[in-house]
Length: 123
Image (cartoon, rainbow, N blue to C red; front, side):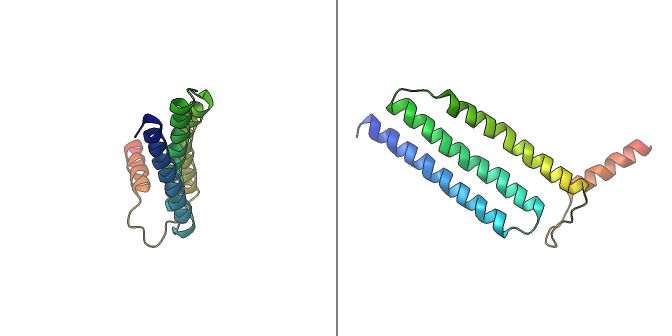
């Protein structure tokens, strides 16, 4: 087995893993009960899926063709930094707009934190 075959296997595993994670993310967006869980599914697994696919493409072009694509690296960095932050902002704005949790949710940590901050400020 030569080096190109090993690189192609690693790239294939990364791309397939990224595709499966993106599929899981899309199923989570469809099946989960409220905006908080849906945002969690879309930011965590979709980000991981996209990062795996872009990393597989980067490895393929770098080791097979000897080209290091700054666009792929910037895409990886951009997705890694912006998707979780955007998900956090969306969830926080939904919470501040008083979007209700699903009936199966058992606790609201952000509300507990905000209540404790109000108690500290009032003292």
